[in-house]
Length: 220
Image 1 (cartoon, rainbow, N blue to C red):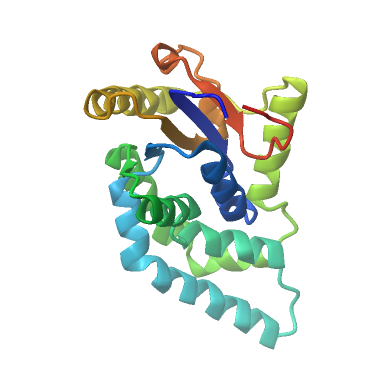
Image 2 (cartoon, rainbow, N blue to C red):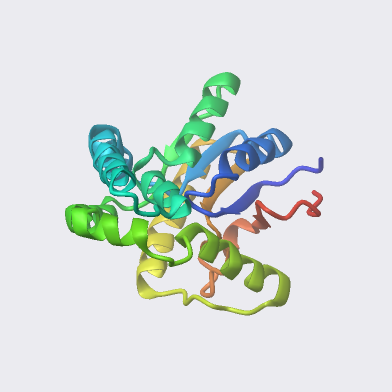
């Protein structure tokens, strides 16, 4: 594989196929440094409280089954995955430990805090029950559809908003600082696929190679 100084790997968060796909790309790219679009706060929150919320989800699912109600299995998986430790963290950490590669959490704690402080309401018993008995398509499946429309047909179904801009500006600045300490190293930045859009070219100075991790045809 030809040398690539900076690769952006776009993933789908909470994708059941994600762990195997990410491991495969790490093995192909063999980065010297891995940066993740994850915050320390988000990882710590799931480590400390994730099991508590998953027990709540499982308890409500079991209650519904005992009442003879149909339980949307895909939505059950999606809810549990929301409180799991992100696979990006687990897979990258294992790769880093095995190959002595540093792994950095790059995202802003502030936005993670704002989102996760509302998790009690999001995962209230009423909302969990509605999700498990509803017919809505799982969020992960919606993400796959939106990503494929974008990468295969160039159709944008989600906007790149101000929050994403602020976060990418923050992460790209941190990556720039890291590059000063890891000169000549091959960087891999693992991020949600929407961040590959980068409409204001925040990652442009790194001359990135952008990859969607479901793209099996992509060759370096």
